[in-house]
Image (spheres, rainbow, N blue to C red):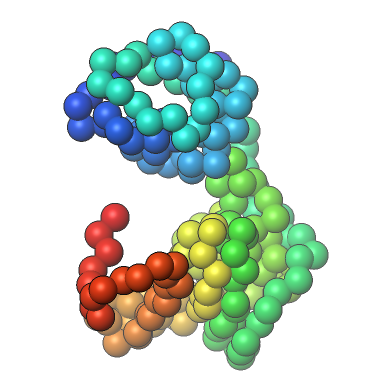
Length: 188
């Protein structure tokens, strides 16, 4: 069974990449998943094949055909982890760039969760079977440190710390070129 939608690109969507607009329509799916569909010609512009990076124009007709998703299961896989700290309650792991945090359409395996399940049987069940122990995430293309809960009590405590900002997260960006400001906000 498949689902097919057709829509006309609006002024608000014009100028955005094709894969980005697809994820705005279907936020439960990743850009990499839509890049795969675009390559399989299941995403068309005016009935024609396109590229994921294509900038859309107002009035263009977008057609997306989604196949019935395959069941995803988080299974243990022997993937090397860079563990910075571990005790009975949590694991602090340095996630490399290019690794997805948890299984999802377009990335069903070789994720941090698959590696964690191979490393330990003790992970919090609060976020279900696809996201065990995952308290917070970072993007696939971002390298960085994640704190993973090994039990529900630790998960609840870590979640509360994120909510009330008593746990600090800091991001560092490498910038190429001359940036005249000493401070600023990236809002995107």
